[in-house]
Amino acid sequence: MRPRLNIDHLAALVALASAGGVQQAARLLHLTQPAMTYRLQELERRAGAALFEREGRRLRWTAAGERLLDGARRILRELEAAESDCRKLAAGVREIVRVGSRNSGNFRWLPRVLDRFGRSHPQVEVELVPGAAGPPLQALLDGRIDIDIVPGKVARADVSSQLLFEDEMVALVSSAHSLASKAFVTARDLASQTYVTSSSTPEPGLEYERLFRPARVEPARFLQVGLTEAVIEMVRVNRGVSVLSRWALPAAIDDPELRLIRVTRSGLSVRWHAAIRKSHPRTGAVHALVQALREALSAGGAA
Image (cartoon, rainbow, N blue to C red; front, side, top):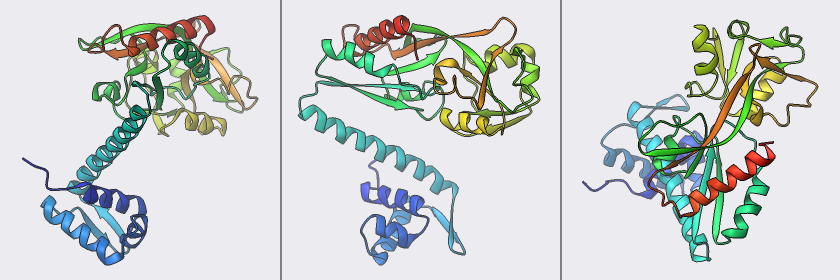
């Protein structure tokens, strides 16, 4: 079955969601308002469903509209990436390798990895995709990234993983918090607090599996903020507490407004792995970049 919608229709849908109104969306696309209205009417006719409803001056998306909007965003994002790749490949880049990590905004290690890798692979470009959206490993399995830096070894037949380095998980609290003076905290200490997190999806190898589940407790209140950097800022102003890998906290270690506290009396380690699809050839750039990551991170740490 051939799609009934084209790129112009998808762009109109995304522009409407971004702008919040037809007139503003028309400006984004350099259209007149009547032309934008016609395009949206044609979009709904071809889709065979009402995509949004008016509530006063606001638009409310229907279930069909939400579904189509999600697909439109992904398709346009992938098309933009493909066009960008084509331009780079035409300019002499032979291959593009994308590295993602949902769990850290710390890329201080990147320059030394690129230096090491670039000397042996000058025609391979490395791109970072921090905070890849979706469930764990989804961006890797979808092909949006080629290497996913994940906590713990991956147990999937279509994915292989190699250990990069070992780190410690620590509790992050404001220096003004009641827990700030403790030498270590337990799962029960944290369960009574507002827990700030970048994802509501429990991930293998992290605090839900390693800390809360064995203690048979979980935080009573969650505050989901989407990015590791946002977690740190919410903790800084004492809106809650969190547990993160030290790898994610290079700027917080010497911050007088924050305290990093050991988790459990004996500490809680986390082993970071590079996950890749098994379909990648073992002699290719992806495996070579994993090796460069291992050498740089194990030798120099992740800071």
